[in-house]
Length: 309
Image 1 (cartoon, rainbow, N blue to C red):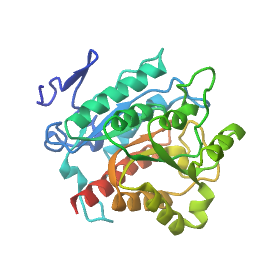
Image 2 (cartoon, one colour; image 1 turned 90 degrees about the vertical axis):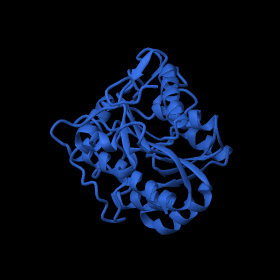
Image 3 (tube, one colour; image 1 turned 180 degrees about the vertical axis):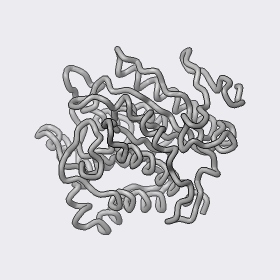
Image 4 (tube, rainbow, N blue to C red; image 1 turned 135 degrees about the vertical axis):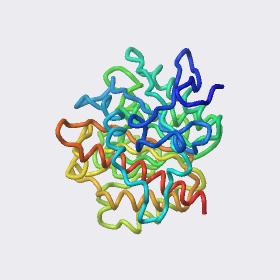
């Protein structure tokens, strides 16, 4: 395997993936802290939105997020920690499988499998939420864990618009591989509610976090167990904080609500990887793009800090 910067990094199903250099990689990190061999984490951009159900545009999310990330301060003042020194590699974006959502899921899974084979920590950046299924399946083939699903929507439909591989079916697909706990939910169909009740699925409404945050965080931490994967649909946040999403939903949680949940999860569990999805950039409004970039860096900081302790 060639590992020098700008050479072929690895090949999967005929696709070659390269390390990206500044200003196109995450946080515009220099090669010293972004080369694949020496990096702890690997950013996987997936510009895909073929099954979005309302506003299109999440295909532009990864590029906008990476551009905004160049403005990040790399010192985390909360933790007094600089996670970038552990190495954060960004690989070239995955080419979308436009005609087959299932093939796109499989492609993401193949890339995440290769990354974890190398002992790296995967971070999938969407694109629509469906891309998370590939990452979760890849990890589930190796070990048992729970998914912490942060989202405004239940995403538990059996099929949508004639397909099981839809943005509206993400957690129904995930349920075939592992247990999950949903957080921040505030929109679901009658059928989804009936499915949750019939299968005793655990979830926390957004209002639960807003009104009794500390209690919910303790309950969630107890339920999470030893190993978890975190999947963050940005619409878990209130539209006043994060308007640039495919399907905005009123009544969401705030920035510090979300960080409190993530910090406690990283403190109490082994994080196997995570995704941040559904950023749909709005022309002239870069604040949501920067928020998404900072969220990734904060979660990497929490995960790396407690891993090192």
